[in-house]
Amino acid sequence: MFEFFRGSHVQADSESGNGEEGAQPVSGWHERLKVGLSKTRAQFGRQVKSVFSRARVDDDLLESLETLLISSDAGIDATEYLLDELKRRVKREGAETPEKIRGALKEAFLELLLPLEKPLDVSTHKPFIILLAGVNGAGKTTSIGKLAKYFQAHGRSVLLAAGDTFRAAAREQLQAWGERNGVTVVSQASGDPAAVIFDAITSARARGIDVVLADTAGRLPTQINLMEEITKVRRVIGKANPGAPHETLLVIDANFGQNALRQMDAFDKAIGVDGLIITKLDGSAKGGIVAAIARQYPKPVRFIGVGERIDDLRPFVARDFVEAIFE
Image 1: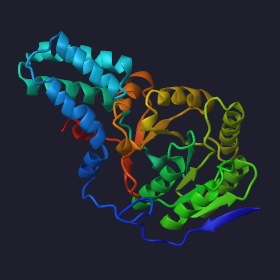
Image 2 (image 1 turned 180 degrees about the horizontal axis):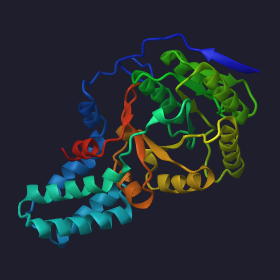
Image 3 (image 1 turned 180 degrees about the vertical axis):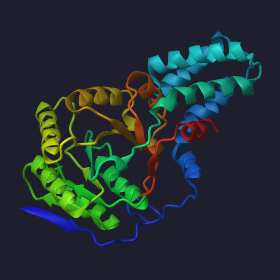
């Protein structure tokens, strides 16, 4: 039997997205982004200053910068691109000071990431149906709860579909987010995830809901039976609402590093990934993975997560991201 869990509106905890006490609020998204990317900045931004202490682009500088970029998970392709672009810019602009050379790298980095900046527009369909996928531990269900909060803050009504019937307590976790955000969660104690999501879409259409966020079971790309299941879920969504899902988001953990690229390839082949959510950037010094994505799998980065607070998931803005790691 399907369950319609109606969350009573609860004031979101202003201190922490996971409800824990003691987190210190940081005012302003730019400052919070800097705090969230502090490990990447310590690994990358500050070491870049050290690398550029000499006012000359020579072999030693390029070798040091190559090591730094690869250690931040930028990958070989993006690293080679950035080094080549740095040399071209320095020659073209005649940069002769450490600050100008560093600025040339910063602008090359920004130019590389700008194509990933494509905000998600949910006004094109009603309901706008978003299917979320990813491996266990990437932060998928938590991201759904935070997305619900984000869309509500922008005047959209939201309904959650608990399509992860595989993982123990996944339904309860999503219901907790429904309670926190005051939104309905359509779920089933056990059974077919496609049927749960089909029912959620039917309910959303009847109630005039703006956005449906559909959870799915976390899976590894090597788990063929589960990959086939999510492919089935996608087909069923199309039957429930022709043309849907309107966005298929893959949630990846920044800590996965280069393995995230393999995940993107596998999920894209199975279900067609439209965009990305990159989570846990606050827990990793591997923010360079965004550069690797830009070169190898340039899917739009719709949102990034830089903390545990309920509003620490925000749209990706390339310039803000670059400024935060180069400061």
